Every structure is written in C-alpha cells, then in structure tokens.
Length: 170
Image 1 (cartoon, rainbow, N blue to C red):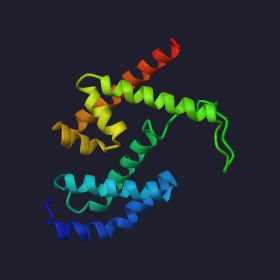
Image 2: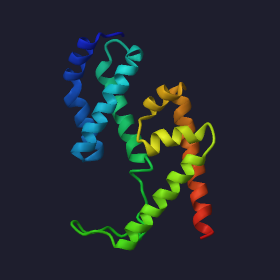
Image 3: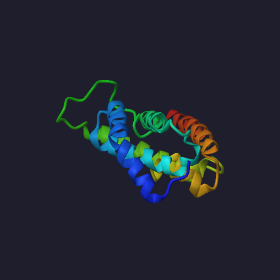
Image 4: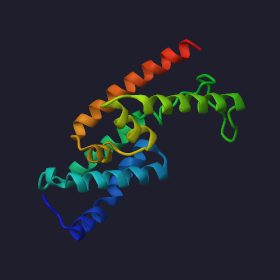
C-alpha cells in the first residue's frame, strides 16, 4: 500500500490514540510513550508497502508493541544499579559514589563501542550512543533492518563480555 504524505497524515491521525495507548500500556511513562509512538509512525512510513490491505490497525499495533519491547530490552532501559538490587525510595538520589561508578561504566562502554570493528561498531554507535532506531541505523548504513537487528544483538553480547572481562581485571 502506497500513500501520499497527506494520506499518511490522515492515517496517522486515525490511529494515533491506538498507538499511544499501546505504547503507554507497555511503558507507563507518557514521554516515552510519545517517543515510541513517533518511532512507530516513522517505521510505518518507511515500511508502508508491507502493510496488508485491510489490516492496518493490527499491523500498526504489532509495530508499536515491537518498538516497546525493543525499548524495554534496550541497554539504556536495563542499566544496572551498581549499588545493588534494592530500590531507591522516590525523591532520594543514589549515593555519589554510585553515580560516579555508573558514569565511569558508561564512559567505558562508549569508549569500547568506538573501538569495535565492522560490522558491530557502527551499529552499536548509532543505536546505543546516538540513540537512533534500528530502522534509522539501517538506512544510514545501507543495510537491511534484520541484519542491523542481528548485528546489534551480537554487538551487545560482545560489549557485555568485554565490559565483564574489563571489570574482572580491575
């Protein structure tokens, strides 16, 4: 199905509440749900030709839920609390040493990502450091989306192993 910009705008307006609701149900964060809604419609625009006629609602719902699942599984969202597994009470900040350790670990990860060779380095840089979507990274790198997903997952495993080895030697 191919749409003009004005037709896609009408399409997006028709399904905006549905997509936002799906994203909010997953994340429970209004701003994150808005961002994921935009990501969903960007992906829909890029892949509109794959939408089965008559199944637009289900197709968009699947894109939205996949975007949310990717977000919830992302390294940024699953960042480790170095102080332990205990929850911080609302309104309290973590201790200064915890914040410093998290910043140091993030800097180590960023440094490692910048030195990773092809094909993982560029994918990790775009998706983790620049926080681009997999679709945007695929377009920029000229690679299929599925390939970028695979390279991102393998790159994350390599990065995790690298950081674990590095922290084991400290």
